[in-house]
Image (cartoon, rainbow, N blue to C red; front, side, top):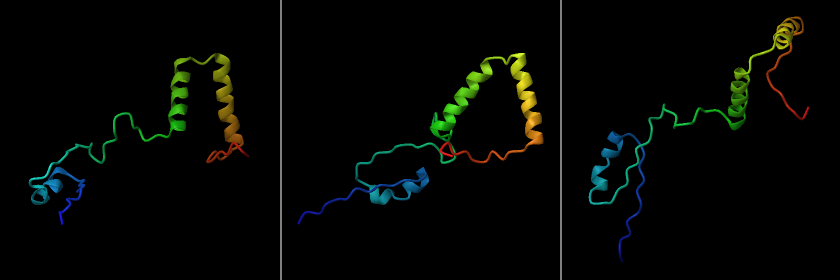
Amino acid sequence: MARTETKLELEGTWEEVLSHSRELAGRRVRVVALPPENEKPEGDDGLSPDQRAMLDVLEEWKQDPLTPDEIEALEEFEAFRERHPIPFRAWDPEL
């Protein structure tokens, strides 16, 4: 009966993979260098698509200067919130 080699998959630091060098001797291997665990992949800021979309809207909004009427409305809103505190912890559009 022929012996079948099984696929061995390892993941870890280079030093951890090297500790398996005897098992890997004579075998074909593929090495893929991953970013460090504490480093996010390029373009991954950890935000959900909805959060990313909101930030994009806010960035676009920052590009347009506020009119004097808009500034006054925002200032009045801050005073309104101080008089009538509303906890904005969660929002359910279905409610």
